[in-house]
Length: 415
Image (cartoon, rainbow, N blue to C red):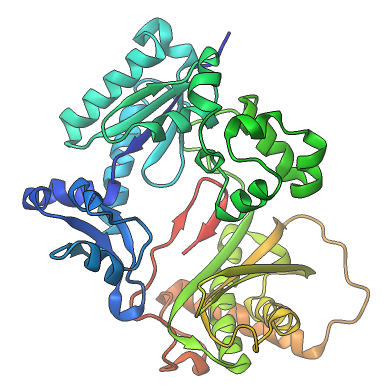
């Protein structure tokens, strides 16, 4: 039996929810944006009027203002967005228990077994669009296909408030001619690499030799091939199922650029303490550390990672992150750093057996772990802001506005 997978995407989610609360915003160019004073001034979502002026999600607010004079910027209200998102997700469960969120505004639904009750995938999709509009006053775009990748491709094809179905017989006409960047998981870096080997469309990617893709992209090359050919068949999770945590990360765009290694070390320590706290809360140890560094001039990002002795200590994770940074960063080429992220990777449960390190643990490492435990216990009891490292006070790097924690369905925790 061929599967029936839907991908439902709330159109301009944040902006639409704000306009739902304040209908006046429907008549003016409006966008939801971050905090300009903390250099988080980017467009998070925009309405259709702003879109006509060329305003894009992810661009700086000052740039959007130049394109669209009079653009109304609304600060984000994540609590309201989560509340509305959860309510809409519950509506989806009327049709199937296989509802898998993908971020706050998107969900996959497996309606294969729902057809006898609710009709074809297209009929189900149209009913959902109608119900969301009538009950929530929001529009959604729906993609209908036989796997998750093409269902999402369908919902992206026509926006806002539309339904697109992609059947197997539609591959050559609808899917193959599309730019490869339209495929889920193909970002700018992957697109550049594919273009270097002459691959510009999804159809060309599907016809590319698998050996070539494996050579250039490793295991990711196999997934790219499955995505492009429509052979990816991963299941849609049962609603409410928590995915296994694969990494725990914390990052910030700093209020001012870091110009020295000492400043980077200061920021990494605080980020790592937060990561350690989250590892403790979800019950995992880190077997590796990954850092992401964004240049303050070109805004290009680079990632580096390495294995470490298993730990749940934020202090030890921070030491490893900084040592890795010192080895890989070239200050002459990149004299300014705009944002930093520290991630704990290669995670395993803290209850699982761990290969011991036969080298004697240093006295300092043992003391740092004790400091961690005391700090985490205080934060658990009195809140995240109840205690911090002295060197982070009034250092001018951390934004005054705290980020909003979201556990994404990819099994990655970010702020």
